[in-house]
Image (cartoon, rainbow, N blue to C red):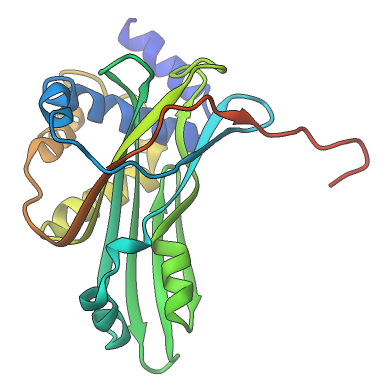
Length: 240
């Protein structure tokens, strides 16, 4: 596909879909050469729910990874120490070792003394949100789970195709600069919808993702079983 046609295709997508497509593009390029080696190490399998939206254009995934918050991390949160929980996940079609899409979620938690509440900065494909909660349960619900996270579009995965996910969750990765780059990139997809091979921006981000993030305070990896995503039911007439 020519660079002009690629840019036109991107502009035809929603902001969230453009962000996801760009994430997929960059991550797929750097993972193709390492997928087979990575899969040699067996990963725990945990349930992931996949669901197409009612227009069958966007695929969402939901998964719980609360076990990444062990007693040490829990104590840090209760003491009010800033904590970041970052999820990166790669989607595959059944029977293939080549990724078709990649997504990410970053959640920064900061305790504010005067408000006596946790400030949560949640970054996902196409969106950046700030939420507040007064409880640790509220933090876990927002940051140690991914609910309805955009993982692919119908251009990347045909409806009816079985898929599976491979993911990594890190608590306080040692590269805050990388996390900030991801935050800026994912939350402003319209600014990068024409990046292609040879562009300075393309080289910058592929270079960043090729770097090893290094140790994190805590890390877990997991895969999902291969399943055929369900489709959301369309609202009936008269329902809001």
